[in-house]
Length: 354
Image (cartoon, rainbow, N blue to C red; front, side, top):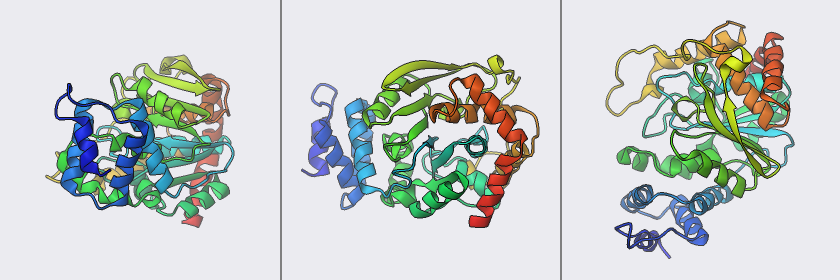
């Protein structure tokens, strides 16, 4: 069976198509990742999926195919939490998952952030941008990522480094210009034994995302609808999510005022003007440097929306990793870890390894 055959199964109209079986869906993404399919066929297949709507079984099979072809770090590492933000990044808020991850690591978690740089269609700012602004870089080598987590309790790894075929799909994604199931799959290229903190876009996808995470066998997870689909909660309003613990899904609500962390505004980015055609905010060196400065300020103890949002994000990581029984416990542990200077020390240890 080739990709063209699978495209026919999806049909040209809602009435003459059907969902793919798990085996068909697995084979489809296996074909895409193994190469040999034309960009036109891949683009048509992804758009057909978006038009049809993707089932839990399909996304689960897509993600499993990606995992089976990827080099996954930290497979057998206990207490690992993988942080899975949108890989096409943010363009109105600074990505604070590096700050939150360093704080959670300082509080005792093992944190692996899964990301990439300038991924279409948005090509926004990601954890890779933050590290670049800090004068560091993510690693493209899964073995190196595992070494960094073992030595410092924190690492940022490229999804394309784990599965190089993802890089080969960037042109297709850029030409399509809208999100496709690839945007979900790449966030889930994680070791199955890890706890997850996953960002989900606004709308009715929250439950679907958690169903997929559970079907992939993760023991613990948080799926969160943060600003712009990120993993960091809002500091202005309630953020919705779902928590998975011991095979049970529980609604999660993050209300910043409950922890004394509410702010009148979100941690925003300065606007330097619209990006040039074909580029995104992730290509803007001024914004990259700004992201680095914001994260550095958080780690240095500067108060404000970025600090508060980072503490909430760290609390979620600690709760997902079973290092905190409640979000309040997580906020308290994160605050103590940040104020102790240990999060900044972990960053300096990363510098010595990079």
